[in-house]
Length: 245
Image (cartoon, rainbow, N blue to C red; front, side, top):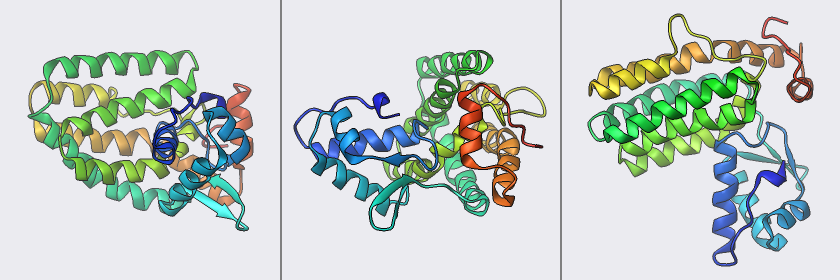
């Protein structure tokens, strides 16, 4: 997976390595449990091992990564309880950010979000799972950036740092489903109407409805009915491991 990380310029190396890895995790470029090999990662980024090690340790402190036995560094695997607790927090924070963005976002940005959503659906339909995960992140993150509340955005990003890798479990095993139409469309309509409550509700319902099957997958992981490795292999082979078993 390290091949998906871009080389880093030579100035402010630790910060730039950290920012690249942090963004990669929020975008879901790494699966839960992914083990980092410092030497390989440094080679991919075209830097020495020292800034890579320092950046990884910073991500460990932020709970995006875990250190095992003082040496092995892996992407954190959220438990079902952790996911649900963080989701409860996200419902408030991301709803707040969406509402704040409603009166500040430019019409051209709403049009761009609509194009991102269309790309997301196309990637889902064609089985381009990584691209779909990244599109979903771009859709939501762009709205939260439009809120122009940097402190709130930093908190949301800190949660997505831990949540982003987990979204990989949605594809192909738990593709988001909705009671009616896709909630992104509700969000777009509410943004165009400058309806703060509608945007807040759309974001919250997207999280709850779109994540229902993911919760079922996490329940199966929690019960030991399926393993993370089985889910990864199934996704790589294009084989469905259903949420219901």
